[in-house]
Length: 134
Image (cartoon, rainbow, N blue to C red; front, side):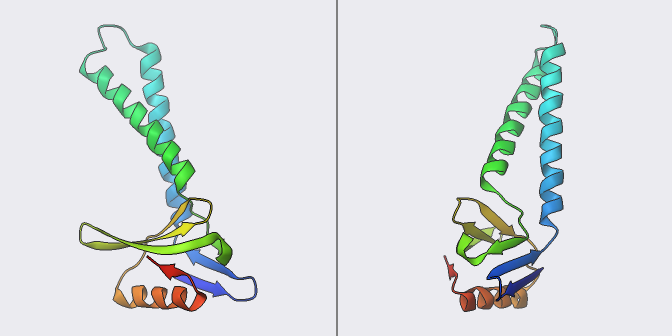
C-alpha cells in the first residue's frame, strides 16, 4: 500500500485499489437484491418452501449490507487531514486490521498492510501528522 502525505494541500493519498473492490462488492449486492426481488415477483405458492425462504433472507441481508456499506464505508483515495478523527487497530482472526475513522461517521479501511515494517511506517506517518491512534 502506498500512503503519501501532501504537505501543501494537507491531504493523504492512499493507493490500494480499494475503490474497485468497493465498486464490485456493491454491484454483487445489487445483483443479489434484484435476483431475490425477481424471485419474489415470479414465485408460486408451491415454491415458497425452503428455496423461497432462502431467497427472502438472502435479499434482505444483501439489502442491509448494501445500505450499511453505503452509509458507513468509503473508498476515497484522497482525504483531507481535517476529515480524519483517528486511526483504529483491530485484531481479526489473528491479523491486524487498520481503519481511519472520519469526521462524517464513515470508515476508510487500510487493507494492504503486508508486514510489520509497513505498519510501523504507517503509524509513524500518522503520528507525525498528528492523527491519534486508538
